[in-house]
Image (cartoon, rainbow, N blue to C red; front, side, top):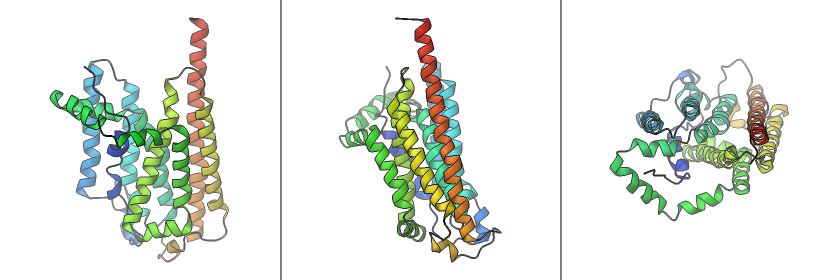
Length: 297
């Protein structure tokens, strides 16, 4: 018997470590090379990997999981761990560019790779056999999950991600998040969860053999609006977030140059990631078309 949790549970489970990975402004420069040593955060991140490996192994034995899924989850997990546990996390409290690296790792690397790894199915199968059906039924009966499914539809998911990216980069909102840990946690959660929603809606077209022009449109439009925000930051001649200018600087660049570097990180590598996904989807659809031509119905 195969048991499934609703996919939307992944938004709740994958995002669990995020609240522990938010540092407010003011970490001394000497501390920006420190790894995040919060035990519960490290434990949660490691547990997610161990449970996935256990569940994936059981699914592989039944020939219902692939090595590609394992590679995707492993890569996404490494990106998530780098964003939450490595010095990138602590450096973000003193450097806007480091903060952008963290956000990009969460939104355009960890989120799509974790979704492609289908973690919830593996986590469910990591449980003892007698627990799987009750757990699946318990989550499946929760009426509140239905609205998450609605939010994961392509247009709502795109709008939510757009609002999260642009809303939090409004100077007043970004600075408030820098100074208040609760807001910083909320910022990270909204970035990551909105990215999970967005990438789920886009990658749902992976199973189709016919082109999904809607997925390409959402990828292109997201590339355009995030690139526009990155360009505004990179080309600006004024500091958007004065709080970074209040810190003693030790990176060899000015706060404005740090902001411009952060904008470039969002602009160039960020845009490239959406192009790569679009090309991979197109290649799959072309291959599907070739297969249909060789093996007509």
